[in-house]
Image (tube, rainbow, N blue to C red):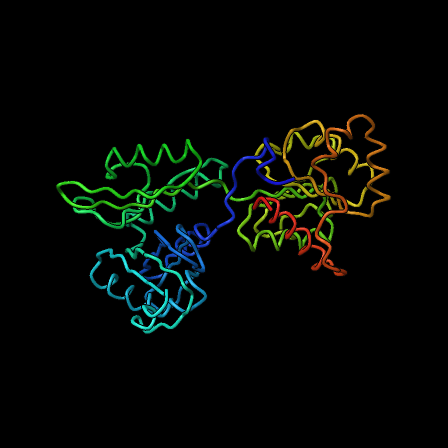
Length: 352
């Protein structure tokens, strides 16, 4: 089932560079400069909305290219850090123009990047923090990145003053429509260009079962910037220290719907290795319209046994069920099996 065919699944954002940037920003590293792609043309490594943070040490987190632009961006970031003034940089790597920049990437694409101060008291820091808080709670948000204007300082804005009311309305409209847009207008005062970015929540994966093989699944999902919730009825397994970065809940399978807000989950993998618990999980999931992706670990014979036990309830679950869960990549280790699971979920969320 393609994502577009799943009427009951909400939009989800697979680009988690915002969260990566925010985690490092909260560390208080000296003199950060935020770099945001605001527009692209042709073939580029990343698209509008991708971000990286460049620090005074020259270190950076995130990537805007495959490594071919980052050294040049560090030079421009040093100017922004010194002056405290945001600026937009253009890269055109299409054809002979590439040689003019001395980069030689050969990517056949062009991009415009806004660089701006992003220290703890900056406009950018406030905007990123507000957006990540909202999406972490499962609520969509929006950012307005002004990259050319005569009467508005360049930078990344939350949907609050000092952003002009007209742009606040455009940001609110982007949330309502669920899509980003580029604003390019001209007036007597000059040209105004902005990237209005709709930010859907990042994927929230529910793992039913906290056995040893659930650890690499959680690790792989967390590495992608996903939010992970793990539930198990066994105190020996439901230990937060075993799943650092995830939310771990101790609860019987029969109360799953009371323990986890299933409507906030984008995918679930049932893998408790305990037949009665897996049956209880599947029964509750069959009664719920969400999530649209339900993965079940185990061989086909086990799947048939569980579906037979569900009886008439199985009909509501079958269209959403992936069992055995995961892509057929020849995985034999727990880590390989986790890779196959997360790859299949990622493809599903991407609408593939």
